[in-house]
Image (cartoon, rainbow, N blue to C red; front, side):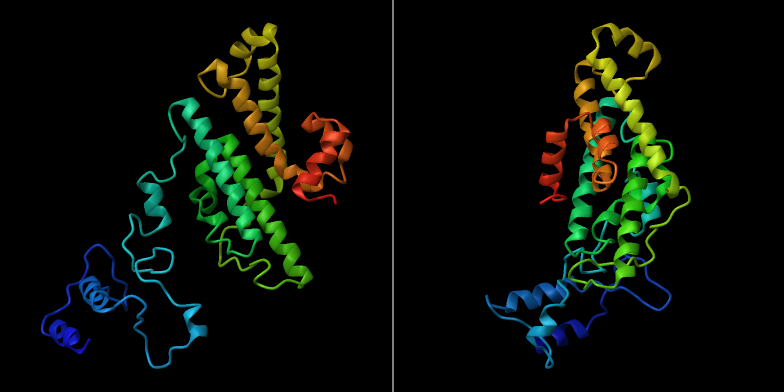
Amino acid sequence: MAEISEAEGDREVPICPSIPSGEQTVWADASSLLHLACNDLRDGELMHGGNFNLFAAMSALEIMDPKMDSGMVRTYYSVDEAIEYGAAPIPLSFDKTVDVQRTIDIMDHLLACEATWHKGCSLAQTVFSCLYLLRPDITSSHALLHSYCNVIRATCNAVVSTVSDTRTNEEEDLFTMTHGLPLKVDGDDKCLTMLHAVEETIARQLRACKSTLSRKRVTEDIEPLQNNPDLEEGFCKALLCRLRFPLVPCCDKYEETTRQRLGIGKETYCLLLSRVGFHE
């Protein structure tokens, strides 16, 4: 390693132009040095300092991993830059069918991220890895996605507030640090009202799809979600399932109302609660 240092010390290390420098920091490209060091290492060998221990290894950074190495070259360097270059488009597509499909993908992704957060990961690496959550204003023209994102954000805020007030959790149970993330946004107090309005619109569309006599009225009075009439009913059901899922935690208090909204019987209702873990 001494030979590598001497060889590299004879010439100036080039500054990588693709990474912007700060007021007190300058980024330098050390890729060639790292490649040379890796070539000298055999399988099972580890290069470390004199104070290295196994405990420190648990929090060691992994070079070239974008999630851990802040100097890793990425496509964008800020949320605003990513949005400017089209990373979070609204509408998601000018094709209505594709727009609905992508909306469902985002809803599923956010639900998976929220479940991962509940298992101990941070909000920044899970739910708020979605640009639509970081910039609530950009979804305002997309009623479906806007209402869902507002509910997800409000749910996370409610969980953080409740868990923080009880003071009975450890970081391994639920990571409540928000690091300045936009958990509270103006209008979130009306998120359920917005969600119900969108839900009612899609529910009317679904009822109309099931009625042969109403198909003409649907075309005239209710704008379809997408362009393919054969897929309309399936998309309506898929969206309603995802929009109604946030209502499940309050099912015990409003059982009768919830069953009516979900359109299911008591037996199916109890089975649903048992599947999601609210009843033994």
